[in-house]
Image 1 (tube, rainbow, N blue to C red):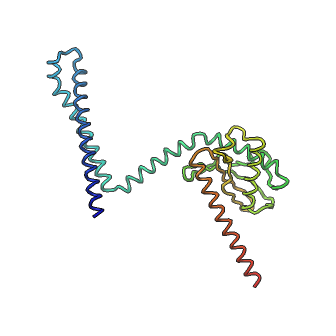
Image 2: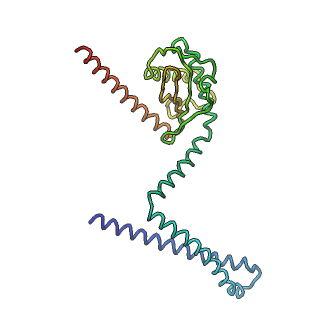
Image 3: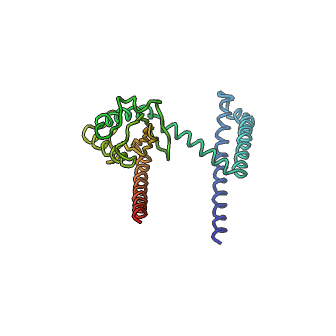
Length: 255
């Protein structure tokens, strides 16, 4: 019963919408016809204008006919293959949003590159990760990826040295050093905080024995702030699972 009543409500809403739409178009048709009549003969009298109205209505009818064809085509397309249409619209929105997100990305990438290179150089004795200058962080140039409407800036360090920390601990240490540096000296060229949150966050670290890859989030929008909090929750679960696995391995080794 609820489904039937909902369908009736939706049909009533649709019919009301179509009625109001037709009324609006009718009013616009009359107004446009009057404008066409005036454009056809600007110096004509009222009687002459009335004689020009059929011609103006003919122009309007042609425009409406063209619009009706596109309307029917679009309506049938949506009815017959709504998933494909929705997917196409989503892809278009994603491309437009991606272009908007990438507006200042090149500048942000370089500013973060300079900042992070300083972190590695100043703390080399404790990190044992060789970084000569800012170019050492991006040997292949500007690199990024987009996740959940957020730009993730990618950096890469050639590192054959043995890491002092595992990647999980290294990520925690680096984020701590980033916070200390921003609190003491700020962040040149970028805002240091966003809504009381440090604006630079290392999201992931990947190490294959030769190359250290960093995925860095710059927090400067509600979306990136939401991504940051979700990343913290993810890291907590990951750390909890890691501890549980270590306990299990310890119990198995003791038997």
